[in-house]
Amino acid sequence: MDVSMLMTVLQEYERRSKAGGVDPASLAQPQQMTWTDYRQALLNGSIRPEGVKLKETSLTVGTSQLYGCQGLFGLCGPDEIIGLSMGDDPLVSWLGMFPDTICEKFIKGWTYVDQQGTAAGSVVGTVYGDACDDPPQSEKGVCEYYIGDFGTLHACGEPIKVHMQGVRKCDKQPTYTLPIEGIGPVRINNDLDLETIASAMVVKHELSREIVTGDKTVTGQFDGLTNLIKTGYISTSQERCYAMDSLIVDWANDGLTGAVNGHGSIIAKVRDMWRRLMWRITAAGFSRPAEGEVILTMPSWLAWQFLDEWAWWSIRNGSQYNEVFRDNYQMRDFRDRYSVGLYGGGYITIDGFNIHIMPHDWAPITQDAPDFCSDIYLLVRTVGGRRVLQGQYIPADIGADAVAAEAGYRYFNIESIQGGRGLKWLKFDNACAQPCTQFNPRLYLETPWCQGKIENVCVTTQFDPLSLDPQADYFIEENLVTATPITQYWYNDNGWFHDTGGAAA
Image (cartoon, rainbow, N blue to C red):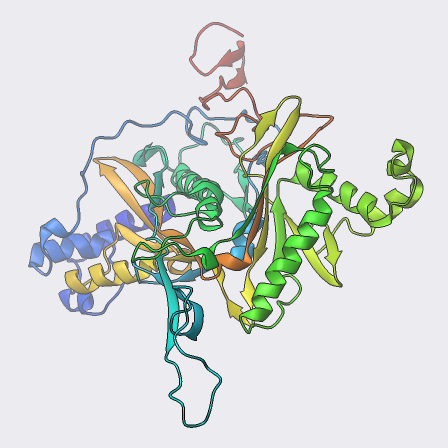
């Protein structure tokens, strides 16, 4: 509930109280309950008072408030707040998020079908023979494995004083706008909105981390790419399922040329990986994926040099051992033709198929001094028109609707947001409130066997790599300082004074 709604509700309550209250019959229609309706319903017994709690916890008001008698920013300058670390995560968008309500998801697959005795290495009878012979019996192998439950990602903004919503230090204070992911500049009129956005950003940041490193054995997490694209798949009957394994290559902290690990150029390795995965896709009876449904994802700083290696690998000749050749005009011109692609990270072409690069700057970064290292994933989203890799979430509006059905009205303290993708609620401590949000996601992968990963790829960089993860060692800001109100100044006949009313500045 933002400040304008709160003020409207209080004014409406006063107006209706003077006019004799509200008609209890008006509560019969399913609708968002206002404060006025709630108070009147309590008086006439239409609802149980335990349905809403106005003091449920003890809150300590935060200090990093945008507005009020003290603020985070000075009064001068433009209203735009530059979000130096806020931006869309393209990998999350590419994976997509789809509603699902089944906690226990299992992937079922055939591993083989042949005649009896095949698994034991001693077949029984022969498939070929005379028409009067008894034919052999068939046998089959299956593998079923558990995909993992949903995670629970939740966070709260800082508590705020309700009565301070709408308060400004002076009439010159600006009304700020923030760069919201996927939307653009949004006008923020009060700190309750600001803290709601902040809580949602914390949840989205954790989602970007767990997309790669999530581990369902950790309470509240879900399996990310690291734990889905792997070898060592075990069935629910504890049988080893080699057919389900992803294609994993350990690059052993070598550079892109593979001169030390013996693999050779990483482009050749990606080529051979793609051919192997494409063979498995067609062998399983699926058609070739469409362009854009297969990506290479890696950090931007690694993708830049990956494209350099792609250009060198593509047009090298007998002079490839001459370092000048690796940076000539022909090489640079070739690379520039592949520098954009569908997702802004460039692309490469293998056997006439374009594989686009999806930069993901939330990926973990390691160091093998003086080089920096990360992993490269080869992801296949769709095969044969079937979506085999996607994000899922528990639709939050189901829970909100259930509460409304039980209480007989829309419970105003909890509501679904973002089209049912998440929940939003307020914690109360008398005249203080704290907004919170929650999202319940997971990654769903039906075909780990047509996904690939090259681990521990290292490059030499002119500058240290940068990460978008505020918890990473390579985040764009090394000096993380918690926001606190700054000293505000104004002028009167006695000169310039700061907001504590002390000595002249």
